[in-house]
Length: 249
Image 1 (tube, rainbow, N blue to C red):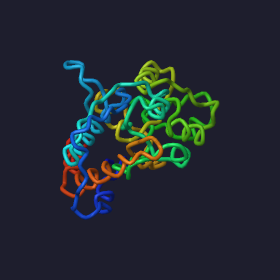
Image 2: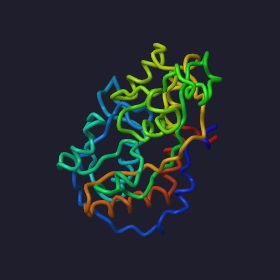
Image 3: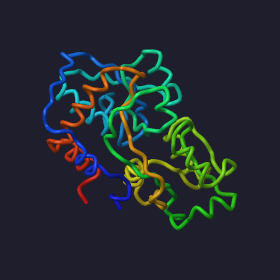
Image 4: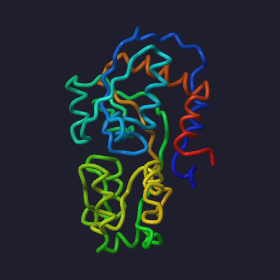
């Protein structure tokens, strides 16, 4: 099922030749992230530190181009406004690259491609999109995401419940306030493992989205970050991180 949830190897093949000259000279980068989205980013309760795949990717990039990442946990609904106001140097938070977002922000090259999926209660794991379209069954998503947009396209706005973060959406599913949560397959798989026997990835193979690192429009830092990204794709670091979080199957 893993290959239906995301693709990274294809991006590695697109990496630039292994010649990297970018040097950010130890610059500290203030990085916005909504740390409520495992395994991409979450807060380790034992240490209070932000951890996850996106964090590891950014740390690895900074090792290549000589920068220091400083992650700041911020709510999704204000994350892009904060970036544009200069509160962050960049955002990495499972952000899908879309034409609408590219109108007023710049993106790195994609670092992973994810396929959206629907998380269901185990007892309802055989539900289909037609069940939601028929009415009476609610599909949840996080406000302002491509997941929410796709949910409305698939089942109609009247059958969609929106939440400020995915943690609230997952809780609503557990409480049967909604019957499904549409979410990136990478995170759906993580929730399935965390709540084994309770939640299951029931519907897969939906829209695929490339994820990118986000910058203010015109920020030259994107070139250095792209070099670092190409470096970790070329030397196997990215493949190792994918294996760390999702295995090799």
